[in-house]
Each structure stands twice: as C-alpha cells, then as structure tokens.
Image 1 (tube, rainbow, N blue to C red):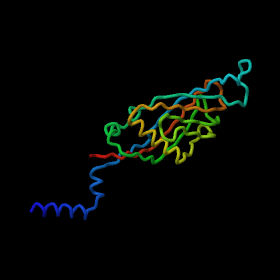
Image 2: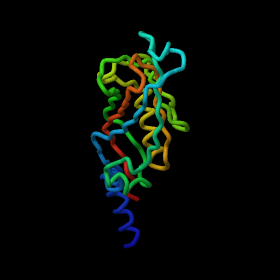
Image 3: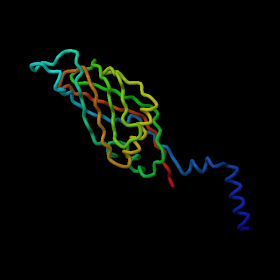
Image 4: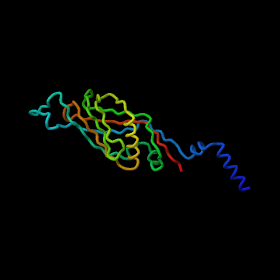
Length: 186
C-alpha cells in the first residue's frame, strides 16, 4: 500500500509538471519606480578661471559620492525577503540628470561608478540635461548587479563628469527603474 501511494504521488507530479511545484515554491515581487538619486556639485578645475571669472565654453568637472544600502528600498517586502532573492530583472530603466538652478546644459562623460559591481563604471559620453537617457543592455546589467549587491551590503556610488554649467551648479543624477525580484520561498 505504501508503494502504491508513493507511485501515485510520483505519477501525479509527472502529469502535473514541475511548473506547479516551482510556482508553489517561488514568487515575484514587482516594484515600480525604484529611485536612486545622486547629487554632485560643479567645481573649479583650477584652469578655467581667469581673474575669478569662468572662461566661457569650458567644461567644468562635477562629482559626488553616496553610500547606498537596503534601507534605500522603500518596499518592505523586498527588505523582508532580501536573503531569499535568487534573481533580479530590470523591466524598465531611465537615467536622467537635472541641474539647479536650471536644465539645458550638456554633460560630457557622465560616469556612474560602484567599485566591486560588475559592469562598473558606466559612462554616458554626451547627455543633454533634462532629457531622459535611453539606456543600453550594459547599463541594465550594471543596475541589476548594483541592486543585487545593495541587497547584501552597502555600496559606494560615485557620479562624475564634466558640464558646461557654472561653478557650484548642483547636478542630480537619477536612476529610476521597475524591478522584478525572484524570491525562493523554500
């Protein structure tokens, strides 16, 4: 009788397929609008000033570093399941930059760097401030690796580049994405 029950159980599993078992032991957490904001300040490069006045048509450097960790995720379900997440998929991704006091500047060599993250650094060669940047597969892969690392530990991120804006202009770089977290329930 015991063998018959085991055989019946195996037969049921083979007829129903493994997908039902997989569905019962995993779930997806879909999070829309995950944002990572990084702020940098335009500085004097020591060359572009003449008598205290910035020479025109010169690109000035900007840069800033921020520590990102699991607390930056506003979704409690992601935080609660961080040790069970077995995969991440970026469904949509937008990288943008804004400046204070106004947009319209051009950024050259915008670099997003996170040491220890696969695909770091990511460089956008030319970018018009205030317009969304169409991301690449490499950028998607970098953000997936970045998010995976943030789930485990603090990650230091540096944004830098050059811009045709005056000194002390604030540059805000935003990475916004929709993410699907694959969670193993076992």
